[in-house]
Image 1 (cartoon, rainbow, N blue to C red):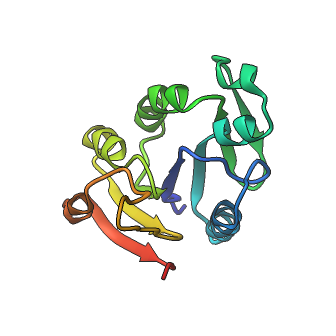
Image 2: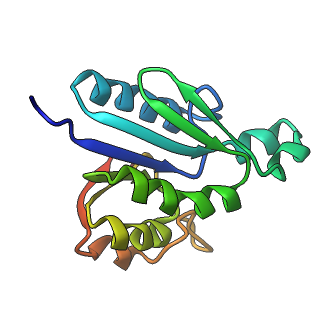
Length: 156
């Protein structure tokens, strides 16, 4: 019997059906394909951006989470604080072979990986940089960390 490789997708933004952009829809499709290829996928997400966009402010402060089962299991947390508070606990109990993540929270993902000691694959859907600032919340040098095994980039 083959043991399925486990992939933990960490996304502190929303993912379909709560997505607001093409990046999350792309990710959802990709995770579907990985599931069909035989990987065990667990996705942890935050619907805070969606709730704020729709002015559901009370849901952002809610301490709860909910689970969606489609082709793979998805946890949604109502706020980013709750997302990051629970991400390490979930990773410890799931013990993934790979952490797959995109665009934000890389420092926190590195902290989680100290416990799991797995490979990190980092996904850039887009990278926007202006003279004043970057949308990335980390130093690009973090991408040189030995825990990051692959970088997938489909941006400009």
